[in-house]
Image (cartoon, rainbow, N blue to C red; front, side, top):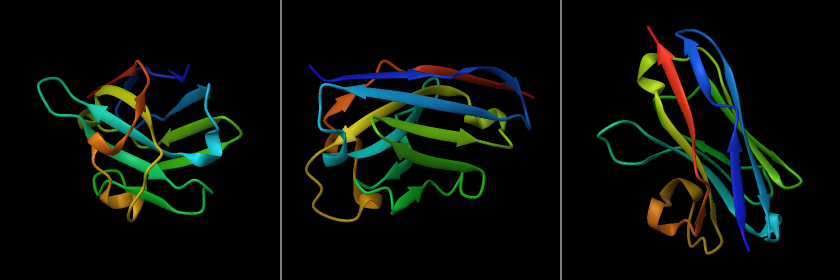
Length: 125
C-alpha cells in the first residue's frame, strides 16, 4: 500500500533552517504531483509548496517564497526551510496528487490522494 513517511521536524529558534524529507513507497512516484502542507494549531491545513511530476515546476505559498525550497528525487520529496519564523510552527505533511487538471498552484487539499502522518516543526521566537 502507499506509504508516505515524513522526517526532519524539530524545535528550532527563529532564523534557523530545517530540511524535511518524505519517503514514498507503494506507488509509481513519478506519476504524482507532490505537496507539502502545514497545519498550525487551531488552523486549517494549508499548502506550503508543491512540485510537478517532473520536478520542473514548483509553487510556493506567498509566506514562504524565497525562503523554502521543494525538491524531489527518486522516491523522496524534500522541503528546505531557511530563515524560519515562529509562524512556521505546525505539523508538516507531505501528500500526493495523481489527477491534476490544471496548474499545481490550483490544487486544493481535497485533490491530494495520500497523506503522511506528519512531522512537527516548532519555531521559537
